[in-house]
Length: 273
Image (cartoon, rainbow, N blue to C red):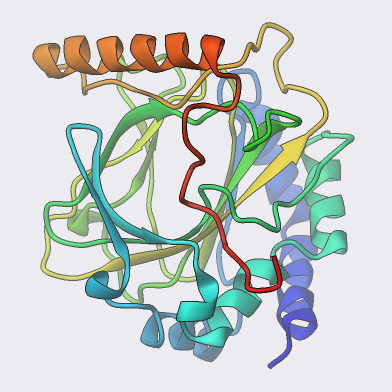
């Protein structure tokens, strides 16, 4: 199946649910704008994505106080279907309609998959509350939307591994959006869009295909450049202190070295580049 065909499935699913999308996003845009839609791809195609998803040992493990998960952006090392699906979400007509629904006039996909690609979470994996890095790798454009497409069949609420949004900040209660099979979640990223993933509680893998979209303009007028900033959950006082110090140190480094002291390794290193 070609990327264009997959993109047509996604586009038609968005069109069918335009009213729901607009209602969800408009109701939430003053805090953390988001929407989700189900049945994005034909069931057999979505199941196939899960069947060919790389195993944890074929991915990069990230494990620290901040997070515990498996990621990969090097798509040529995995089944070609996954690369086709990732780039199907970057089809111009999909970018255009999402931009219109979220009222974002300049919207661009990211061919390099900077911090995007594939992610997998298994038993005890988690992602603490955090703000995504505000910009692309070159600090030319603002990161404005996070697209998360979930492909694990029969994933239940009690399994954990679900997206949490913190519209009132990471000291309050989060809003949980389940990582259901064949569901696309799109969330805004800006200076107050705290989000996390709760701990996986079962011996199984929650698999996600993700993209970031960028813009010439920030979503919020008061947005300023910031590195990815983590914090603990409301009851993790010591973790909060450590992660806050970490974020301040990395911000200091970025004031001195605009593009950091090393390139972020989480990009798609294509052979033709």
